[in-house]
Image 1 (cartoon, rainbow, N blue to C red):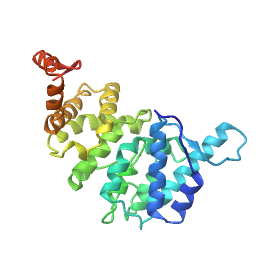
Image 2: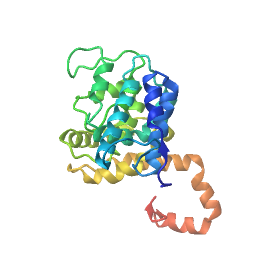
Image 3: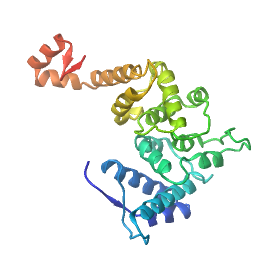
Image 4: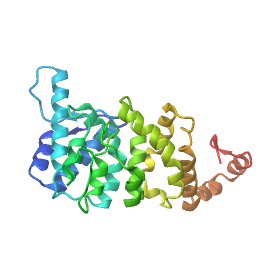
Length: 266
């Protein structure tokens, strides 16, 4: 953590409402990166004329969520794959912002993207899937067909599901239900994904592994097996293990024979 970094709420609102999509997305990314560096905290650069801290925070969250909603709800805004890949590791912070706002989630944005008039019937236009996935939060009350999402884009869906499992707080019934379902469903799907690890939010793996322990189902630790397997394959394929063997051969040969490196099983 590098401490608080201020960001401009006014510039976020201006670019989102002016439909300057590239600039607005850059503002969203900068805001979420600032939250990541400050371990979830956020500081606004401009003074806000509210009588107390609670009013300040409530107004800030409402304005941020409204601005982001206007951007992602804009039918003319299309998210590219590189942009999605940059944002998905920060997605848990976006979820936290919506959960803490008066909206509680981003279901209103998800429904705005859909051409269906049914409450939970989501029909997306071509090119809308990636930004739709970023609006899914643990608190969402829209029932998702995870099998269909996986068939549409397995890698993007896996990234979303890992992000949902990496969210710190799952205190609502909807969030708890999603975690239990995903921890049961996702491990075997990750085994068949075939994607290289850099196509997934590897920076969230440790959070998924840690927070899965808070689940209730007996197989809650199964998710760790494919995550460990992908990490191990990437380390072996990248040559990093060979480099370690060259730099500290006696230590690593001894530890590998013992089945552990740096205290971890190999």
